[in-house]
Image 1 (cartoon, rainbow, N blue to C red):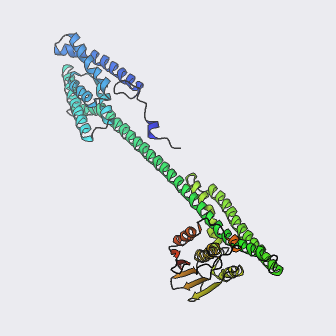
Image 2: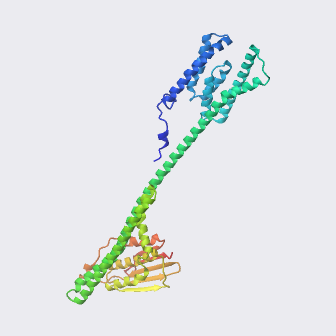
Image 3: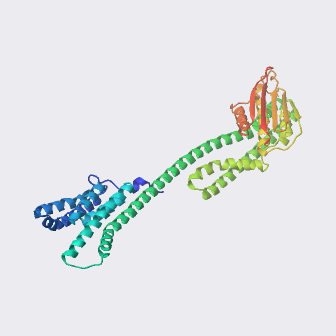
Length: 440
């Protein structure tokens, strides 16, 4: 993983303003060397100025030692170097001071002004000094020599440290910018990883809810019919053996159909797991959780698109199974039947199936009306049952337990497709389930 800028930042272990101890050692060493140089150059300065040698030495040592504070006060160091230029001392002080000034974060106009002052001072002092030496030694040069030599020497003493300092400062700023960019990218990656984990958790929760809903839809209807037929079988086993055999065959058929649907769902989930493993090998690490969590959901959707999910053409068979269990069902279809998307047909089928299952559970024996309407841009369905008849003690044994999730699952399915779902009791004492789903 990319290291942060804090890991690259130097540990602040030096005294005062120094970030590192070696920086303090370097500046103190430069200050000592500069003080010794200026002290040595203070001897001829004292002789020329007519002051005591000790005063010249002390003045030079103090001026040269200013280099110790070059990192904290680069402007002061350059000004001191300019001030001692007429005394012909402080060459190291001037060079290091200009380099430190150019490498600092000061505005360019200040750096340019101080560099120009240093260049002008060095040019004047060099010109005067060369002229004095030529006069004393009675040397004859052309009129161009003194200006050329003065400009060359002043540029040689000023330009190299200035350009080097500008380069080092720019490079340092570039490195800091790249480091900040790396820190920003790492923070973004961490944020993306956190969001991916949140999405993965959300996808896992959604997938658990979807699997529970699918299992409920697949199992509840078949098992409900099996319980109804088993209760009827128990009631007629001794009175009508032929009818008992027929009911037993129906129970067996229902059980086999339930097992077949369960196998199909488990097969889809297994193929989704293999798809998730393939995706984990292909996607970035941050997206693995999301891919693995939604793979099963995608596989279920693929299974429905491939024709494995229920469709509206199976409604007649569904209603026939309810009628075989003793329910009176009236089916009416409005509009011209046509094919819809697999998700739409599957949802419409599951709504009718769950509504009929609820009638078996809560209103056994009640007459039920199933209405299906094919419209221009939507499909509507309604399942309504009359009040249930009086329940005898024998029939009470066929009552089925309810988990309270059927209506919630139907509403979730319809809402996921942008439809509207309404359910509730009727004025006559029955119950009505209505849903409208967009056709596309």
